[in-house]
Length: 318
Image (cartoon, rainbow, N blue to C red):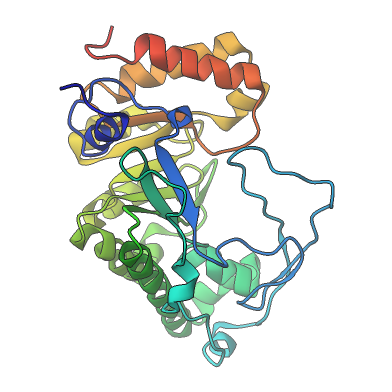
């Protein structure tokens, strides 16, 4: 019997060689949000962070996150944050109705987490203050990061209890030129909480997708050891083929085609990049071909990516 599209996706994630390279436009990946995951279009969220208003005329593209940027932060130090009450992730109403209208026989349902531990700390304090706090008040910073991780552990458990089959967590540690915090400091203050979040999915046999921006190779070995299943990385900053060669079947990739190219390149350039991703990242499975992040790309470039996946992504490759 031929594999269904969902079975084929599972093969790519494990990774075991699938029948073809799955791609985002198939519609088999269904990302869902618990109530309150996205910040409001304007005003203050449940964490106390204030967000700039989006224009009334702004309409997000298909799959594009309609999110503003933080303009007000509720605390000035980690010590102050320790006196504040954080949102409760155990409220079952956060996850009510997540699977309504989704054919779970066909689609893999992935629960999206809000900002990861470091990203949340930056939203609560502002980024410069958060970075300084990691150095100037490390004990308080660690305590706050662990409380944020506790929140994500609760979100992960709530997703799984609601029937969600995988998680998607994002946390940023690097820019285009490399890490913006020392990996050893990250290992000491941030990785312990990440391990606890990832373990909820790992222990349930559920994959975890992890996104981090920039040239983030320094963090990948620890994330692999912690149990991250699928990496969504910035193709233009990271050497994905080198990571594939180093970790082999231990990891899979979601992405492979740079957003910048998808946005400003020609269809021919998109086809070339998509074919290169197929050839270097999916020899034994392990690739879900997609733009690095969901945005409103030119339709001709989205069509070029799909065409390339369908033409060159069937096994045996070549």
